[in-house]
Image (cartoon, rainbow, N blue to C red; front, side, top):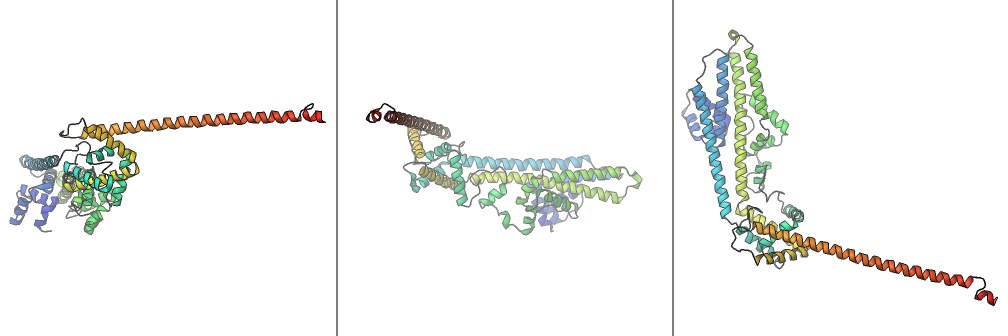
Amino acid sequence: MGEDQSLGDPIRLGRLLHRRALGEPLTAEQQETLRRGSAGAVAVAARRYAVVEFEGYAVARLLLGERPVSTLLRDRLADDHRAAEQRFRSELSSGAALTAASGAASGVAFGAASDPAFGAASGVALGAAFGAAGGAADVPDAFEVFVMRHAAGKRFDDVLRDVLRARALRRDALDRPARDHYAWLAAHRQVTPAGQLPEHLRAWLELSPVAFVERALADLGRTPRTGPPIHDAVAERWAATNGAVTKRLHAARDATTAQIRTIPQARRTVKHSVKLTAAARACAGAAALDEWATLVTEELRVRAAEVHRSPAVRRLRADCFAAVATELARTDPDLAAAVTQACADHRQHCDPHAPTRTGCIREVASTVRAARARAAASTVRAAHAAASTVRAAREAASTVRAARADVDADQAGRGRRPGGAQGERA
């Protein structure tokens, strides 16, 4: 691999940093690579590599009885890594803050708590979409749709699931993802879907968690060390290992160090130095990839949050919510009527210029649920009353039938009794 390709590889870039720290001569091309690779997650991870490899180098020199390395040099590497990490996180945090501010400025008419990314523009789109669908008489604008969403609860979610499925969308397509950010971004066409990545990347992504760790261990144990491909889609998989590779390689390095300590100083050779160096480099590679994966995963999270607040996703959410509300209004006109009435009543005393209507949405939805609960209870009471009336009527009819049966039986008995009319005729 050429040095220019080291820009995307924290292990190779870290090796250059380590060599520079030791005072080894670098070519002009290598120096340019270090200059260009001074920012981003890969740059931070490369500095982590340099720190860990230097620690292993220092231990190897001590075990072989060589002159100890300067602690000043070690501290300089550590400070460089710490500064790069802080700079990265600061830039990432500033970017997230700007994104959040942009999302808030895009429109706050319908409340952040009920749907943080839903701004005024999408609210208008939602109202228009619902009205065009023929539900304007029942639910005239987006406020009603949000009220219906909260009032209907699980029923709204169930219909929304059907709407998303019909549009070939993920179930969480409208939500900000808590994990699997790369796949979520791929569903919104922000990154290349995993199934369309090159074969060598797909091969890593298709591994089971255990097989992923084992293959990473094998690759980091080879010379030259590679590990998994440096790609955003792989970062989340590596982060999910929770440092399993690094822990095992650290344990192997410590075991190697302990074993060499048992050998008398005079018998320790270059072979032992090579063994220690290899163990240190494997640990450094795993540590660098741990840091790279953590930082890239955080970048993906911020990027997904930004896309979630984007106009395109807000419009998609508006369209889907409108479709759900329209279907609920069609199948449950009583719900639509209750929502319309409650919203109309609320508007008569609500401040139309309030900065947010989140509290209003929840308040009105609670009113709708309470009204429907009372109506349902009234219906049940009426049904019970009707049932009682029916039972009473049935019992009365049964009593009449029994009385008639008794009369008929009595009359029949008199006709057959001795001394009766028939006996006299006889």
